[in-house]
Image (cartoon, rainbow, N blue to C red; front, side, top):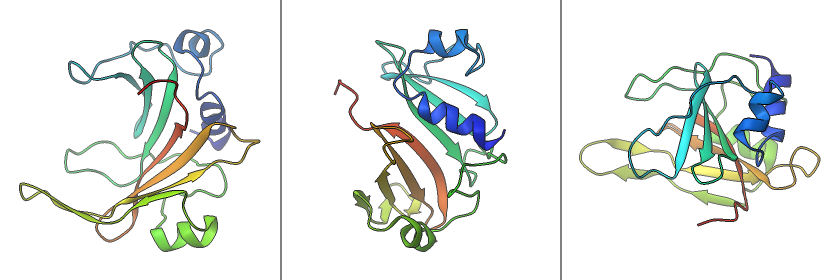
Length: 158
């Protein structure tokens, strides 16, 4: 996957599944409900990439890149990312590059012996990239970026 494709996907946040398939922005894949009652339908257009569409509208709301594998053995994204992002980042580097996050949550210990998580940071994307989107970084316990997520800020639903 190249960075131009990733940029197209990010700029497509808020657009409908059928439009994106018709113009060839995303592959025609069946939208899947990961579990019953969830508000999103998903596709995985490439290893380590997830796209989430709001169930009611089938509008693209999130594009996620798994950079460090989870306990479940999920695939890791190994393609290109647009500048200034990279496949290997940590919280200190993200904050040095992007400054103070618009939202942040610190490390937490998960119940049931699931261990520590490093929390997350979120930043508004530049207006020319997308006027209503943010980028989020979720961190491992040692503060490495585990997941890079691009998402709509205002979704017009709860």
